[in-house]
Length: 568
Figure (tube, helix red, strand yellow):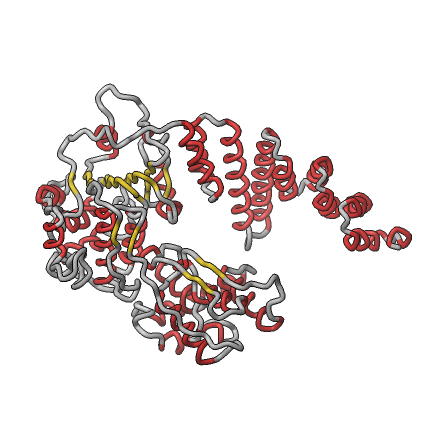
């Protein structure tokens, strides 16, 4: 399903070519004609048939998706032109999350051909439905240069490779680079081929800890007779594969800052504990065993000329020169399946179609390990982890924890103020659940309530979006649930004197009069007028619009009241 969704959102509806058609989507022959570098799937006819079924279902339910919204904006801009606030330059980070059709919007609204500053990392293309490469962006500049769509000709910009990393130390960068080398070898057209980044300094090797169970994880992190809850710090995070994985964490770890890989994208932490990533991976054990076939001689850590010093040889040679010895204990230990005791050395044959999920999983893994600034710990209880552990061990990129070695120095407690600052940072970025953890740790009840209220309001908004396409009793129940959540959020906002937030939640819940009265008390007359008008209390609405100086709105409401004198 993930592969089909990416094809629909990135190519059939999300490509630049799709914008030229009416309706704006690729025709079957156009989709078949796309080069294999852009579309790796072999069964394109099947994908297109699924796309047609998806569109028919969507139409039947009177729904739309993000691609439809983007294409609608293109249509409006084509007919009416851009009439908003003048935009002289556009700066975009995390560009890899945008389909080509969305990027084309930026070309339409930015009048200066060279006013676009675009930054991203194709190894972190983990947003659902997005397949991105910088060479595709360059092709858009080429097309616009040839078509001369604007008064000035587009000059195709040069891609600048940011090769120096000021966040991670060298050993973490090499681990991340080893994953990008896998992507280059297995899925060469899914990423841009870049040289390895260099760091500011050396640091500790990432530590690999194979586990027999989640209980073994707790035993490795706590001394006998230690605290029941492990005291992690504000600069440390436990990363898991998805939301369901959070619920499976041992109770002892619930007090730590815990996020999914997708949530942590764009963030950075001093220490990262990657927990059961492989155990909860969508890729199968057979998919991961493909890595066993990629020996150091076939996939060296550095390509020719990419090493720390020009002319250095294979990845193993470079590792040895830098003092990163091959960890034979890691290789031998991690080939064993702890459940069966069997040796896991069999390599699986790679097939682009059969192992397509591995591309997304490798990009998630790359995103996860590059969140760390100092220390990385990888705990996993699944046999699916063994091929990657062996891959890292053969190249001297990680060290294995010894059997029953106590790792009680992993958790490093920090001050309450550190937790508070981390919580505020996460709050501004919309990570409300993670922010709650921080405010619990620092004991700030007011900020905790704020995070809870914002989280409930966000959940209510998502519930409202999910109600699209529902009808009858199901729709009624969904709306009731949404209103209840908004009222719950409003009640929390009231306790911390966040009246405007509370009023907005009440308005969304349908309590228009209560919201209007609250805004009126706060002196937010224009917003109060909107609420009164929604409640059909037109006289009160007109009065509030007048108080706010919104004369046109006041006249409009008086016209609805047929009050000619007040209109004059």
